[in-house]
Image (cartoon, rainbow, N blue to C red):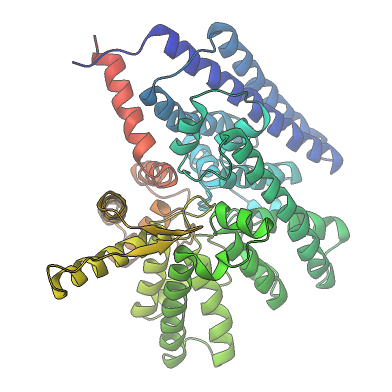
Amino acid sequence: MLIRPTIEELKTIGNFLGWIAILLSAVVFLSAGVSLLAGENVFALRLGGGAVQILFIGLLVITFFDTEGNLSLSGSLALAAGIWVWATGLIALVYLQTGHFLSFTDACFDALSGFTTTGLALIQDMDHASEGLQFLRHLLTFIGGQGIIALYLAILAKNSPVFFTLYVGEGKDERLWPNVLHTARTIWKISMVFLVAGTALIAPGLWAIGLSPWRAFFDALYLFEGAWSTGGFAPHSQSLLYYHSPLIDGITTVIFVIGSFNFFIHYQIFTGKLSELWQNSEIRSFIITVTALTLFAVVICARAGVYPTTGLAIKRVVYQMVSAHTTTGHMNVYARQFINDWPLPAVLAVIVAMSIGGSACSTAGGIKGIRMALMWKALVYDIKKILLPSSAITVVRYYHGQNRLISPQIAYRAFLLGIIFVAMYGFTSLAGVLAGYPLLDSVFEGVSAGSNSGLSCGITAASMPLGLKWTYIVAMWLGRLEFLAAFVLGGYIWKWVFGK
């Protein structure tokens, strides 16, 4: 029998949501301050008004739901999934007031795309968007990379037994410290160190190609936030093509590769354990798949004469393949070139790279490199058991901080999540076909949305059907949370409605 959640637990969930609203209002206020600094007084008032609205909603919710109690396991996971829906709706209200979005759906799409570090965009007239809006969009994707809940834990939270479940519900299960609050704060410290260093590295390169110091600083900040969070947002509609700079391409490639690594690996490196870089099974898996797929795509495009020189083919294809595999979505080719110019095998390589994605407990999406490694090693284990004598003891290990044995439970979970991801890719692809788009285009865009990659072949636009927009919205949400918390939220709502 389903037992309905208690009123106290629902009030506790409401209290959490109120504090999330207050936190987001501070983010929007900061963006309004940037608009003021840029002399965009009218737009600063719009953003400031949106921030006041979110703050009022947050205070109202906290006043009404004034309980700070404990949560059940299902309540914690449901809250983790619900926070992303709540945050998306609140930011969409602000976006609508900017005049750059045609509907509430488009505003929700762009907000969630930022939070989930996908990078597919429905903003109108991006190249003439105000500094405050650009700052807000890129800051949200930076927050989403580390995690909305991780930000809450790092800034506002006090110790509570429910916080680790909230943290896991956001698609992360790596503890850098026994205390989850310390873990969240360490993740944010690592990201802030890279934010300062990355912006300082990119800005001189932009200044050197002719941007003003102001424009170079803010574009550098935005490019770093999009790259580090593997989010794909860029301040110009042409993405990286706008700059025509091999130097900026190279710097952002390094940043989004590093950003796609597990935060555990970052922490190991920060504490001097550099050997983790070449011993870790997930890093090895990434190196193998990204190298194989990139070489394959480069050879295919070079032999087909897609680009006039081999050097240009390497420049374009390598960038796109690494951007795809890290689920970043930055582009130095035009969207329709994937379909119109690249040979089919090369396009399929991009799709496979997006579907695999980066590392677990990172800013990246997709199936994840560690699961690819575990599935491969589980297959090796089964082959060994068949080939070796029955009396032989078969052991298969993987390395993550230390040598670990692959148990049937670990292998089962890796295969299960892999299958669910592939099923979602199939569903989003089918949705594109049913909406009237060609099969290859539908698969490309559907996998990009579900893996939080953000590369586009041209389907994503304000003119695409409403049903397809919401299909991609749900896929981005499910992919970012890795399903569990979202499924629990559905069950929790069912319990609330039909429980006794």
